[in-house]
Image (cartoon, rainbow, N blue to C red):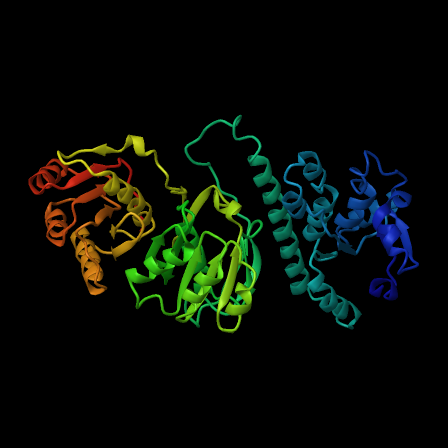
Length: 496
């Protein structure tokens, strides 16, 4: 070993020592130094004054140096620790609580923290990537500069913090029924590890990276490295497609849905989604909620599609799709879409952080109220349910004009609701859609009747909205005058 060549004696615990003896001669087991054997099935090995005294002693303090001499404690100059793989065991052994708990490392983090505290005198190595440059500095005449020692200490505490967060997060899953209920936690401790350094952010002049705190829900099977914007598009598409039980296709552009379709067959669902807007899908993202079959793949292949997202790919499909090198093919785990990885959704601000519970959609339809004289037909009600899912994922103010299995016109991100309605109608007409059987879903309430009048003139005869406006009575009266059926959900789905 490189350290042994520099004159160091290697101090190690039993299992690691047995492995290291294959490579070095100057090796001593911890129990021989402490005079105390490992106990409790290895739970207690390095938690001893001889070990921590050798790490923590300030070599510039004569009293510390004298104490080591009086107690017969040797100095420990380099600490190299690989922690028990708690996060990995958590993923691999979800049903084995005892095994996961046994992989909580105690002695390792204690030594890491001790060495990092005493970084001026002790090198702490927690990342194998830092081994070569550190060894090179140790061999140089100048030695290891304090700036590098401080860098290693920072990484050590960063690792310790992330490790503790993984444990805290796991334990939180097991005490939800007994924990005192609070509206929001008093503090938020977030720990995410760099999973991938990205080429740049939203724009080329911005540095960026993908950070995760647990297993990823998807993987790239083909194509060049994903960009910051690609990852945002994938996340947005999965949030939409997870809402539908029937075979469904979502086409997204710049995190914005441009077409959604459902059908008995995936290929037909794609045709419906594409027909909603046959211009925007070029260079866009297609997400499906069934294994991608060859017929659907051929349909998608008819135009350039940058990203295809599917839970699986049927035999022969990948061979067809990988012929276009600039395309990314993503496979995701539907089970990991049941609930988000973290219980809260975060929005960073210039000076802080906003946190909220996720809006997972899926309220009980039995709580919805028909507030107009006209009642929606069974087909209309089915379409209202379907459209309500779509509009929940659009940017406010949002209007979705849909059938019971296809988007017809979408208006979103507007400063007035009537503008959103007019844009949705304009988009529908642009692509030749008949709105005489369409329904309207609105993510927020109608503040004035102008939107109702605009929708009526376009042919819409059924509307779903949250209700709750001061103008509700005026809106209901307008619908009664025009024989429009209106449903109040009592729940809004703003997305700012």
